[in-house]
Length: 288
Image 1 (cartoon, helix red, strand yellow):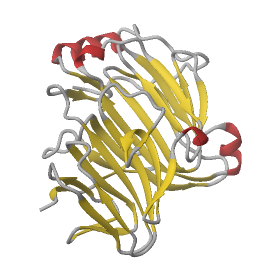
Image 2: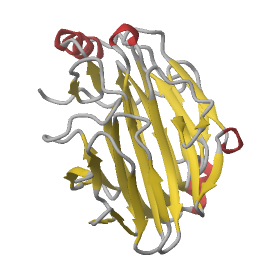
Image 3: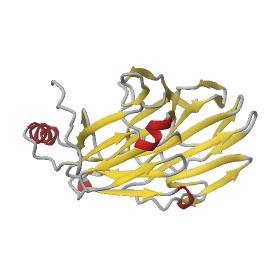
Image 4: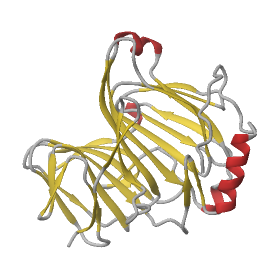
């Protein structure tokens, strides 16, 4: 069967903001380099309200923020200040360590509105886990947008369907948004050994397996897979090459070496991470 594993969402309420967590899962720790996958919202904020994710640290990964609706204002310890909106991409490489905050910008907060999107993490190869941190913003017009059999596709990162994203990745990767009309069919080839399909909105089928909104279908390796929309739907397609070894994930830290996680904990407790300019708040280290 093309669907090797169906991962159900784990809903989490972050103080009025709903998140569906798909990865990591006890039966699936990663799909290609993707080790974390959250579906944020949709959440509707009244005027004067929004999100305030205070400064917090990361190591050993890259965060990948992709919005369907709304806006998030990113600030980090490199001095980056960048609002992200639908169709654009924020790619933050933590490497040896970075701190960032994610908030509703002041203009957006005044008028209120909807926030809806995907927050993913990709693990870095072992050789790059301690690289210098970095942040790159890609405007919507920089990312390949194309159609296949009437399916609208945006290639966020990596390679797929004969296209290549300008986003620099550390290992073979593919990550796309796909929008399908009712009855549309998309053929996903086996260019990458690890693949998954996430239904963000609507309903679809992978061959005969029915998928509802919130389902993550991890595909069996090899072979072309037919994906068909049961109605208008929005999908995320993701995966790539297998990781070059197991990863430990604790809070916001990812590493191939468990002792490196312990060092990151100690560094955050001791205030040794760089600070986000202009921010004095922070998220304390969770209890072990």
